[in-house]
Structures are given as C-alpha cells and as structure tokens.
Image (cartoon, rainbow, N blue to C red; front, side, top):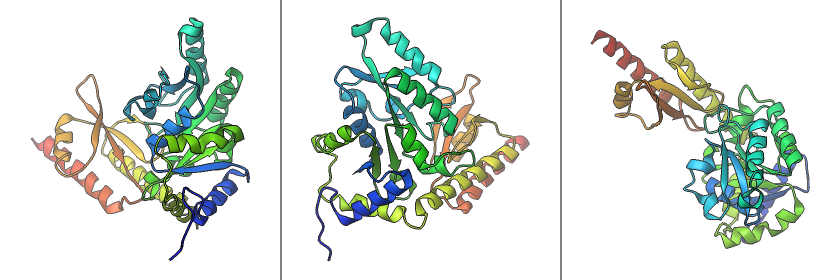
Length: 325
C-alpha cells in the first residue's frame, strides 16, 4: 500500500507534471488536473475573466452548443463568429471586437478567444494559423484558450506541424485531453501566467473540480506520457479514421469536411443511415437542403481495423442492394 497526499500533491501527479513540463519546454509551467473537458473549459474561462468579460468562439465551438451552456452559466457571454471549416480567423476575431466596441460598456467586453484543436469538424490548426490567431489576440489584449480534448489527434495527424512547446508558446491556457485518448478520466490544464495559476486551485475547489484523491488523475497522465503511449494511441485513432475515410471515398461517397484527424463526416442518404443505425452507433450531424444527411463517425484509441471493415462492408452491401432495387 502506498499512502499519498491528497488534492494533487501526490508523487504520481508530480511525475506527470514533470513530463508535461518537459514536453512544453518550461520547467515553471503550472499544470492542474481535472476530471473532464467541460469542467476544464469552464474553469479556464471563469478563472481568467472578470464578471463583465466575454469569450469569442467559432459558431461550431464546443462551448457554444455542446456543454449545456456551462460557460454562460458562470456569467460570461460567449460571442460567436462563423468560423472557416471550424476554425476562427484573425479577421473574424477583429470583427467581433469591432462589433462590440460600437456600444462600449453596453456590450460584454471580449477578453478571451476559445479554439479547439482539432476543431468540432476534425480540422487541425497549422502553426502559421495558430500564430496568426495568437498575434491578433496579443494586439487586441485577448487571452487565447485552446481546448485540447483531442489534442493528441491533432499533434499526430499528417497535417500537423506543431509540438506541445509551440502550443504552449502561442497560447495563454491550453489543456491536454486524456479522457478521449485512452485515460479512464482526466484532463491536464496548462496555465502560462503565474498570477492566474496561483488562484486556480481556489476556482477548482469552489466549482467542485478539486479531487481529494487527485492521484487517480496523476496516475492516468503519468502512464499516458511514458513510452510515447499518448501519441501512439492518438496515431492509431487517426489511422483508423483515415482507413474509414479512404474506403468510403472509394465507394463514391462525398464528405462534408476533410478528414484530417479522427473524425469523419460522410454524406449519406436517409435510407442508408436508417440501415446503419441497426448495427452501429453514430449520429446525424446535419440535415442538408437536398435531404441528404451528414453523419459524424469518430474513431478512437480502441477502434479495431475489423470494426472499420465491418462498417464499410455494411455500407457497400447496402449500396449494392439499393442499386438492384
């Protein structure tokens, strides 16, 4: 039996912090572990903004429509921009700031920009794109937060040209997702500003995010960050998604978004969707004007090639039968 201090002061959590500090290239980086992604976003926003300040997000951003309004429940307005393939652009950030400045104190004051990498549609920021967003944030006095729930997928995809050090250098707050990359639970929040980091445990405790048995989270990340496991699991998710996407493309299907990471968005007919729902778990992402459906398929560290083959065989079998009919 090993007795450990509570609330994240255990040896496992400290080992995990050292591993992350090595990857970001800063031995002074402040790192906090929390159980899930919604909590990580909520804490990152609420701990850095004053009551009248707001966060800018792409319209498809996770905090806009997939976290039950958790950020706005803290009193911070989420201001949206259309986004381009799920990404925010410097021009769109500038436009939101200009729009809110028209009415000065009558509008929430933008203070933070929220992005995720990969985005909600699986697209990945390049280093030049992230640098451009970071530059406009610096010019406008905005903090930059990156949601990293699927950061492993972004860092191991074929399009990626960044390291964790690049992300640390270009953002103010980001987090590394464990839950969606093989961990039982856990996200690692990395904060650059020492003053913000000093008060962060208070925010965690106030919002029920500080676990007494914090070693449970530390063990997850210590294990994930040994022997390249975190990145190997993410590469597997990406490779199975690439195989899935390639197989569907060969059958003649079109895609709503380019497959860059572990999310695939093929366009299917309602009849095909109805057939596939009998044996597979996925959901409809969008209804198109012509009646076709965009479905979202997500692979993971645990997806087996046989599962991809089974799905593609089912699609192919249905396609052949529908042609005969």
